[in-house]
Image 1 (cartoon, helix red, strand yellow):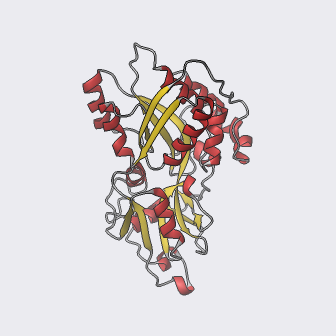
Image 2: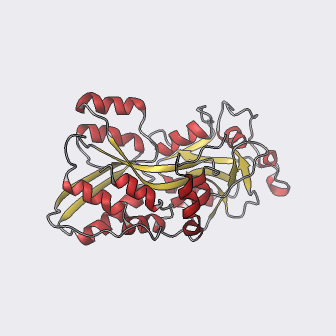
Image 3: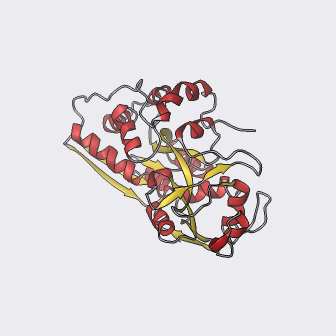
Length: 319
């Protein structure tokens, strides 16, 4: 049974469809207006997928508040929870939700859970070279290609002929690129696309999202997975179906919001907020900027998908 990405917000998907057709920011999202007294240092440690987004958000925020200094380090989502717990970062961007064990470790120290802020929608894309004729796969095939365990019921796939390609591709091995285990993208893909199975040893693990896409762009027989924001002219994004025989859906905002695209996900920033105290002004204003018109315009600029106005307002109310 299909589960919408934004549970309980089906009406938003309908109202936002015309906006998303142009991949533009929902016109109902209000612009950010600066306030007085915002200075200081912000540290961000976490996701590589969000690295460019965080950098662009920081640039936009500093244009309004030149006395603010923002340091950004993006080595993988698994680095975010320890940084938040240790207090070395106020912002912990992640391309996956925090694990229960990570939340427990935070709560053990502070007595409350970290605050989860949804900041963007992403399609975790399966990429092939731009000149590869393949158009779509289902998740069983994706699992059969990238895993050693085939949890989704398929059998091992190692050549392009096994996914229907002929001619020069037929007997060629599929060269695989993926992320390393510090990455939230690695974890999300493992959980959803591999049915929590194990990766094949044939997957060449890369330290960053852009390296995956570059690897695929440089090898016509390659396939890899990475966030949609890292798409370049040298690669093509495959349409994906949930199961064999199902319709394959394009990785676009509307299909992500509805849940039709099976590798849709949110991108997050986690923060340390005591529920009995107001959030510190600097962190709060930065997050308000991210969720405002200017911040969501940055999302589009970086190749990801903006959130509907209703969701931005809902998230802002938790700050």
